[in-house]
Image 1 (cartoon, rainbow, N blue to C red):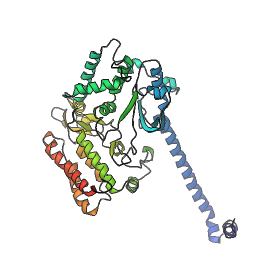
Image 2 (cartoon, helix red, strand yellow):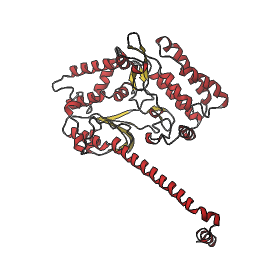
Image 3 (cartoon, rainbow, N blue to C red):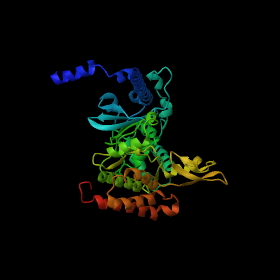
Image 4 (cartoon, one colour):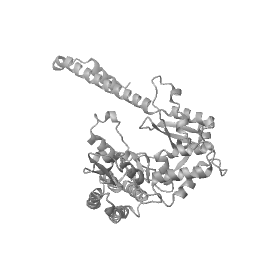
Length: 432
């Protein structure tokens, strides 16, 4: 140890304290003891909550066990089954679940980064034994039944798609796409295990949307499936903001602090403009597409991601629903207030208080919800010469109504004005 450092340590440890400090020493000791105790208590609580939430939310081993058990018994099939259960080249890694009944894991498939999603239907029993989580395949994979012909299966698919997407002229094309997807060994036939697997998957809203929107640029690509487990491409950034405060810490962390940190960690403004253009393009893609219109029923920054090139990717489609499903949910629904006419988190219609029934038109369209997100994500750090126009256009956008009379021309005009404003600023630069 250098001589100067030794002298400093000696002074700190052995030199007598001043009389004033000596008289206050017991108080100082108690104060620091209380602070240390408080720090230990908070740290222990955070660790406990982290462990408790992990053990409750993260049960990927159960998914793996159930899926492989069904696969080995010949009940299910899929393009990912061998990799998951036999070759072990599809591996679950980091848990990203936010619900105990919907497992989400990052993983690797032949060294390629992927996301693996799987449902767990039954809650864990008190004994905690993994075999208590085995789902009854008679319920989960009960259709189609043995003896169903290919024509009957196609008719089943057509009726299902019609009820979920509405009467669309291109439903037959989608049926053929699903049949091709189900035919894992590409022999031109669909086995009972293949048919049961794809039917179970179609009951998952996100899977149905990924199949319907698979050609769209801003939808993650479907890479494979096994039973009701499916694999998608991994989005580099699975949320619009990098910092997400856990729910059990939100009472302790001021919202202004987390917002400031997210602003500081956010990409440069031109890159945020590029992500924004992608979000606006996704709104266009799901409005009057080949399979009808879709509504964003939880416009949360946690569901919007982007890749390394800052192209927008919808990391979570579970909260996007077809207009036909939302209308079917609202039609004839009894209500007292508008809150009773809500599908998902924020697909809300008005309540007709005379007849006490919900109207079927959602009040706030997709574009207005996206613009509400952009007010926080896009305005901070915007170039000064652009800030005024951008703020004005976003303010106009968030007031848009979902009424049919406004939906076509007005919405297209607002959306195109926003895209043009952003493209003009970042075109012919490294960010375009």
